[in-house]
Length: 305
Image (tube, rainbow, N blue to C red; front, side, top):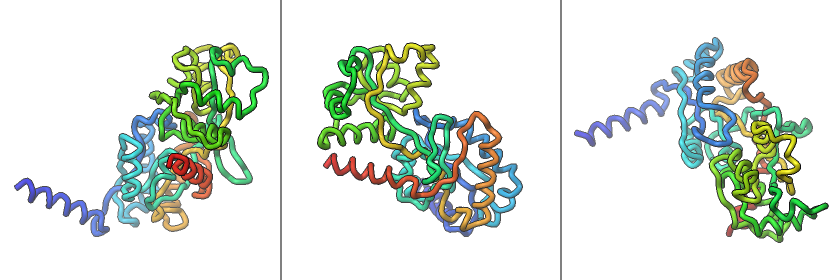
């Protein structure tokens, strides 16, 4: 009997996915990401906003969709696999997740925080990672530090980093070190639970060096009332190449150029983020904004071989 019920459930799911029955528009995001720019409650509010938007509610049935649901992934691997399978219609992914998946998606926007920079010529939003040391590290006392010398010294130091999925807290810092040391990858890396924890560990002397998003360093020091003591506590010794800001990706079926629903979704998203000053801004984006990250990720994989 259990096998029959399972077969029936799978058949019903396949029937719904085949287009012969409507399904909800699915919003995907990563739950528990320490570098996430949006809290889980934001997605619930976004769902309510979309369901109250006249243009979205009008065009959902035309696209064979009924309602809006929010689906959370618990890991980067899970989110990428579900994007590979085309499970979502709208996805709030990290830039690393976006370039790692091969699903039917295209970046519609980039999330732009106040500390991010904007390249008007390339029409892209980006930020950077930093490698820094505390006052106990020999590099802290150097008058002038050649980048190659800094890189060699960091290879011999235990470094706090965020995670192997973090562009600013691992991928780009590691590649920066490799570019200055004849493609030598660091091995003395300790992963932390968040970029804020990286900064705190280095300030408190748990580790003498670390890497994270440049803006996080300033935020942690400000929150601790240590901004005025920054130069006595820490020293930034290297900065990474520009890193593309996180995308808001949409299934290619619902791109504004392909569907009326896509145009209504675009307008509803802009309206939602504009009305929430606590959220990042939306900057129009395209897939080419992430080409540098793809090349850098391919380069790191090559170095690991």
